[in-house]
Length: 412
Image (tube, rainbow, N blue to C red; front, side):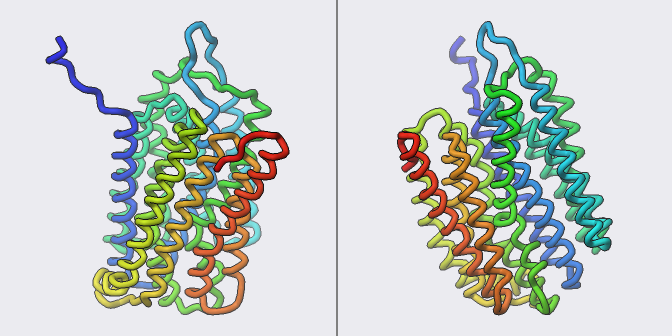
């Protein structure tokens, strides 16, 4: 009997595998755009929309993180509940996305076409956040992995096809945004019948909405730093030449992704571990942060040495970059990765005020630096390095003060 049994693959392994697949697919899409989009203006349109949409993903990840923390499997004899509360969160979130994008079009009418695609993406991302949060809160990592792979797989096919055809910006926008809607419909049809009636939300609707609101404020700031930075760079480019702007956006996306994307993707796993044990939170945070810093030091040196050559080779000499910009970008990605780990630990222990302080200070500092004087490349590197560091310092100070006031042990 025992010899014929199969060893079950842990769900976290499926999630990590899906993360790798999604990361590789996303990187391949950016590489294909860098190699094939000869017109700098077309690449700037691609890179800016890609950045803005994934900033939206990061913003809505606050909803997913809070749902993950609040949802748990129903216990024996316990009444399931919370579906209506999640629907209320979804309706409120959809309304906010609509108002924000309509406001943007009123101020900047030329954004009508990209904003229309962004509206579809925003609503789809919100649905993904609610469904994904339920799956992760119940530790259904295999189902969450299915959602991740489905979305990235569809997007890769569409984006690579559009890039190879040198499609106009509107087709590039659609190829980036539409897969999220398709993926969430497919996965919900398969997975939701097995989730319905199997979970409970451990906080009331008012508390859930309040905590989601606080987390989304922080996630909006996180979105600016992680995925939205190229869009902010584009908005603060001033008189930067399109060729130079394309080079800076290209390197910012390609050089940061190998460090930032994996950390962002596994934070849900860390969130559950940190939630279940404060001792594990401290130990895991120190161990993973130390490993990330060592990896960052090595990657910074390699990026500075090989990055300029890699960019010229990839683009057949059409674009070039300085070693200091590549190295500074990679170092900034490592600093941001550590801040993401600190944020996950704070959120898991319900330290929402410190979590909000972490990302609000980081984003405000980074945007302020980008708005300052000097060439865009220098401003961008300083913003990537200084913003996350100031945010972590602010979070540590706020967490310590609140813990002392409540006579609770601070997260160390």
